[in-house]
Length: 99
Length: 250
Image (cartoon, rainbow over all chains, first blue to last red; front, side, top):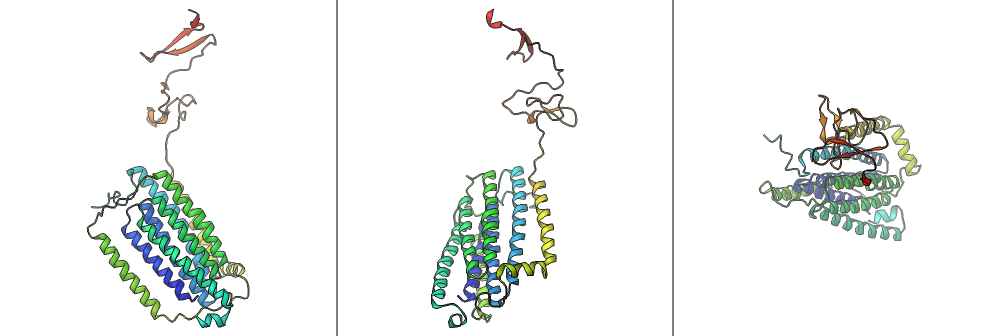
């Protein structure tokens, strides 16, 4: 397979994840869509690492995975704190800083 | 395509890789679309698991077996389980609202997505992406050894910083998710489950005792109850009274 196929698939997955971040209201689902976008980036990194025949892209994808895991841990903890205070996981209900 | 054939791999390998790629591509795009379309968050998590497993298989096909295993262990194993745990804590029955809060938001989001798709597609189309060299073409060692050499030489400082990041994230999650609540018996005169905790101002916290138990007055001194006496509580006054044992005989 040509790497362009993998990169095209990564682009499609990234755009789908971006649409999910924009239209979904549940904060957990928004987080899942962010994970989808990060996964798409990883796929592009791996495809380009194959194209250039070196391993730097794979190492960067590994770092992306680690940072994504840390981001999910802190993000979900914030979500639980918000849920405890406001009894809702919807992004519309966290509006105290609106005005 | 012919370059791939000439560069490495037999015709059978190439056909097999192409077949698997298209199956995985259709499955992952379909699962990703389903993820943003289904209303329940648990179904979204399952669809995300499908996408992640498809990507793990693709990493293995692309000559990245280490990343394939890390993808399965870290993403599908840890991150997705964390999502499911939080879903169970927050409430699994919460279906997402389909009411559009901001007028025209979905239309704008769709237009922005199409714009981004066109932009990225044009960028890729302009880039001269040639055929892939055969797997492990530039590496004189295998995948795992090569990654280890890079991580512990060129990328050793980012690797250490990653460790600090992980520690900070763990501590931050503990601080954020920790709930301070007085437990029964703590700071009270007696260590018992029905003794309410004392607040800093000296009053008692009714919240610290389970509602199944009726809290006693923590100021009340303990009394030595002879074994021949039993304590009864009267429902009317809530006062203690001593009933002689063998009350059933009277």
